[in-house]
Amino acid sequence: MKWVCNICGYEYDEEKGDVDNGLEPGVKFEDLPEDFVCPLCGVGKDDFSKIDE
Image (cartoon, one colour):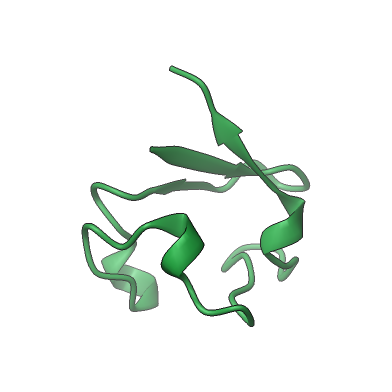
């Protein structure tokens, strides 16, 4: 599953994770900490949308 930040367009791919920002591959978006913020613009999880592929 992929998620996109509605503000800046940053994409989080659960399969790939985001190792540069400490997120290992396979971590589901729902399992990210509640205080997770977009590494590019700093908004919270509420400002992300699921990408339908």
